[in-house]
Structure formats: structure tokens, C-alpha cells
Amino acid sequence: AGFNAGDGFRYFNIPNSRNPAIINITSTSNYQDPGLWIFQVDGESVENHGCTSNSGLVLSPRSGIELGGTEIFIGGPCYKPDDQIVCRFNKTIEADAVYVSAELAYCITPPLYVVGRISVELSLDGGATFNYTGTFRSIYDIDLRQEVFTFYF
Image (cartoon, rainbow, N blue to C red; front, side, top):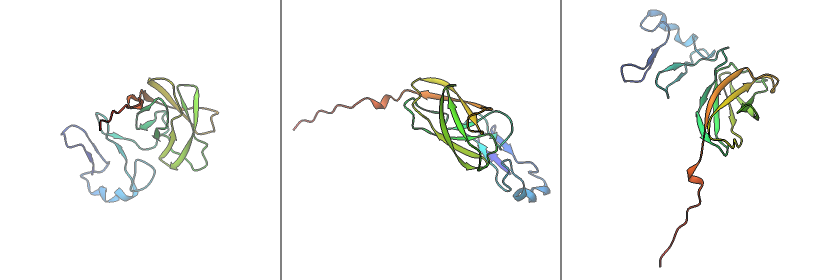
């Protein structure tokens, strides 16, 4: 049991796969939720992303427009319903995040006014400390230019 990308290279096996102990799969997890296994599959490798105490964030999507409004789902830390979750972009711009589950929160990007790779930091204590980090790519939205149409009758 696990995930196979189908290309012969990218895969992840759940512990006890191909073993009689796999019968216990409903009581194990990589996300502290028995029976639930979550993998990140949008990169070059299949990543096993259970909530962890390390400082890395898993962002989805990993890019959005510089004018803000992108809903970013954030995995990595193990969340509690009473956590005061705050996202900080580019070391200066803060936005409140929303608890979704023990494995997931999200925040909406504020206007960033910069294009390129920027840091994303996460706080679980209302912004007192930012112990988790990731990278987000802010892109220029070329579709914002006003279209001009000419109609001929």
C-alpha cells in the first residue's frame, strides 16, 4: 500500500506494505489521524507529509498573484483548534490563518507588491514567534490588463 506515480520512479510505500501487518493500516497514519495517509504529489518526488515538529511548511499552491487573494493551504505543523495561527509574508506582511484540521490550515495572501520568491512564516501563538518557514512565488498577473474590443456592425 502507498502511492505510485506510475512512472516507475516516484513512489512511497506505507510501512508494513507487502507484509501481513498491513492489516493494521486503519490504526496507523502519517498525519495523526488513524487510517489517513497524505502525500504531496505535485513535485519531482512523492513526499510523505504527515504533520511534524520540524520547521518546514508544505504550501499549496506554491505560487499566486502579487495582488493577493490566493488561498494557500498550509501543512507541516500539527495544529490544535485553539492555535492562533498567523501567516507572515516577506518578513513584514501578516495575515490571519484559519484552522481546518490537525493537519491543515489556510490563509489568504494579502497584497504583496513584489514579484518573485518570498518567505512565508507561520506562527501558532498569535504572531509572538514564527517557527515554521516555507517559500511562496509571487507572480505578476498579466491577465489584469484591460482588454479593448472593437465591434464592427
